[in-house]
Amino acid sequence: MHLSYDTSLDLLETVTPQTSLARAIGLGATLYGYPLVETYRTCILQTQVPTPSRRDINALLHIRHLCTPRNHDMVAPSHDLLTSHAWLHLAQGPLALTIPASAAYPTLYFVLALFDAYTENFMNLGPRNTAAEGETVWLVGPAGGHVPDGARTVQCPTELVRLVARVQVRDNSDLREAQSLQADIRLHPSPQPTRVPWTVARWRQPTLNALSALRSPGTRCEDMAPLFFTHFCQALKEAPGRPQDQNLLRWIGQAGLRGDALFNWEALAPWRRDGLAQGYGEAMRLLAEMPQRRAPQAWQTASVIGRYGTDYLSRTLTACTGLGAMSLDEVKVFSSQFSADQQALHGRRRYTLCFEPGQWPPAEAFWSLTVYDQDQFLHHNPLGRYGIGDRCNWLEPDRHGRLVINLSHQAPLGTRNWLPIPSGPFKLVLRVYHPGPQAEHWIAPPLQPLGDHTQA
Image (cartoon, rainbow, N blue to C red):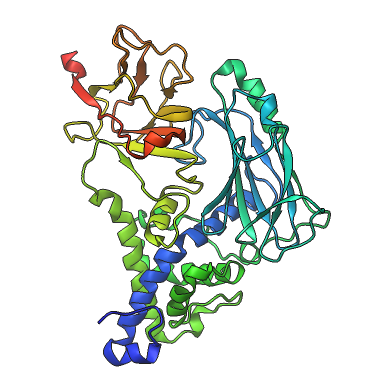
């Protein structure tokens, strides 16, 4: 029997056990709501927990240094971009955001990416769509508010918005220029004291990532369900979903999961609690196992990322690996954990990556190739070289115009085109910023194994 989102609860209960229905809804609600809950959890960690990187709501934090292996505050960090971060709460009215003058920095890539509470990258502001002399745009939330006459506005889908600005650093010689551009990014909050979002203020501990908690011995998935659904319903009150989500949300609501700032898990019927907990457990185990289910491929790239429409599973899988994935028109990301012979990448072997003439990464801005260890952090090496790309003027094509990159743990005889890798398992990420028209069908070449170091 096909179950549509509009099917009534009474009809469903005539053909399915109550707990089975609640379990199905629990699974669906988890796969839909995980990015929303993860957004609020991350907001709390970055605005409410005392750390060196903490910032207030509606305030910018400029990170004025490039990431190194010492930085473990986010997985798979870029090594060639300065970043600025802000959590914006637009319930009290619009905020003004100043965009730097791209004409003053003609050689540097930058983007100000905006994400709603569901992790949708609804807008990217940069040289391609803002005035060359710089400009100020007003960010307006669902409740609206006053903006100056003639001002440019950006309509934001949710009250809570995440801003992540990225500024390219080609090498140490232009670090100060990049820092100057970064400082030109300014946020002008409203004069009244900032009110913390309800879900942030009333968050129940802990703030541990759910997938990380599952790795702890003795942790039972189902026991985490009450907190998840409490946070989900509270967040749903502040971010009630888009028009295209409403049929799904009505179906979820049949099990008592609705936007409610005062949601009470214990007030649900026992059969609903049991079924929802089972569905949550199934969903979380599915999310934990899916990366291991993928067939070995030389490179993987997402066909849907940043802007997901109703592809809720892709949105959640992306949120599982970290928030802040930009849309495909801004950056296309390729990741590799396997070589051409379908063996997992490992530092005991040596590899080459060869870009043929005319087949280099099709970037209209720039491209970069970064190495990560098995924990998805940058790998320490004597050269301090964590990745390479077209910004590296020391890269040397061969006499046929091919760019051959050597990857090994031990240094080769010539280190000009050498990218150091860890001694154990590792991962490669290739980022193509402002991908050109040919990027839609472009495929990165596989890594070719050359043997292990004992054979060198």
